[in-house]
Image (cartoon, rainbow, N blue to C red):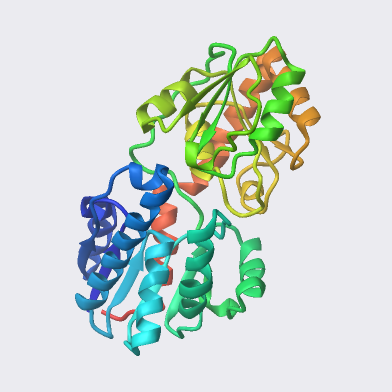
Length: 338
């Protein structure tokens, strides 16, 4: 019996999974793909990206048997795998990790309507989410049996950098792939003309009609090293979000490890990590006045900022890789027998 791990990048990025599960007696295989960042940042190239997802899904089905378990690190690849098993009558068990339901445009809507709905009707398709509250939300929205969901929180990866608290350069950092509430951030920036904001976005997800305030420096489609360098040099990480679906968690975790005080929109997922005014600040969606007020408070009160980061550094330990694997191990044990 085998564990087939799929990923939306090079197959070697599943090595951490294989290194954990191989010694436990599983025969493990990794299936990945080569892709360009342009496939994520240029609208029409999303078609290429989804084509590669389909290729990975088909290969995982071909390389597995009915007694094996396919574990998809990318939820969309897992959904495609379930879709093909459903329409072709193939018997496989699929565990698709970290379901996030964002409305990102025509292609995404089409995939959700055609692919997701078929995958969700496949009896051997199982899902993880990173917040318990999302189980009921997604179960109702997509008419999925709650027994097909598992809770698996986002984790601290071994390659994530950590650093002690520093005052930083006085800037407020905001960035990410999608679902940042740039409108609220810009309104807060206009309320704070003396504060410098650094914002990093994907141009494909950014509203070009938004007016960027003079005290906001925008960067687009940057590589990850530049992204996290800007975060590392900042004094505060502020992430207003446009959605209650999971968003911003990886950036939030990495900011926490770098001892940055975090201000983020209150959502079911962020509340699993942030206790308001204890290890971070939770703000209401679209509340630029609250965001601006908290930024000013933390910039003025270094001891309060440091206290938040110290508490977060301690509380985030429960999202360690060892705890992640312990949970994933229990989930996998329910679906495969060595």
